Length: 183
Image 1: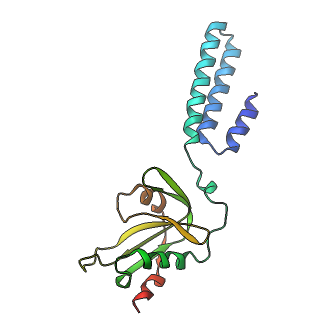
Image 2: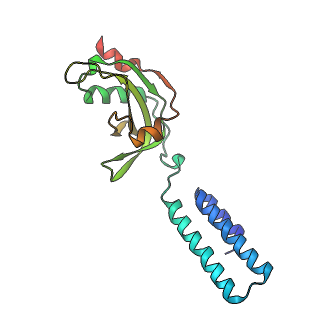
Image 3: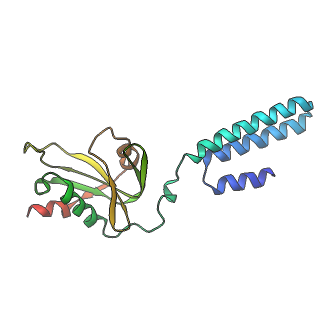
């Protein structure tokens, strides 16, 4: 397989590590041929380059390109879907204040630490009452929407991995739909 073809296949899959591994292999082959290394050293160099390529391809297979997560367009009614979900799941949805929501973006949320749900990640934050009737302060969370329904959500844990990866650059807007439940 030629270097150009290897480079095109690796780039087409979206794997950054694979592209790097292909470049390393091509450089190793070029050095071996130009310097006319002894056959034994050449075989060792080639074996090392192929080993590196294999490891990097395996690592690249573990990555998910966020644009590949969803095939349908973002739901136009994401605000209402999220508000309906929060009304069903919050302890006291009528106490919500200072609510904000971000636009959906491709993302994923790990469920039970074993698998993940992919779809449109919608970050939101709000201040609501807990079971003791006290406001908890603004907490952030995520819902993942696929189609017209929520397929996963996270707890409002500030150290949660999914919050750091999906909501780090979120731009929030007022979330009036959930606050209207009070009225």
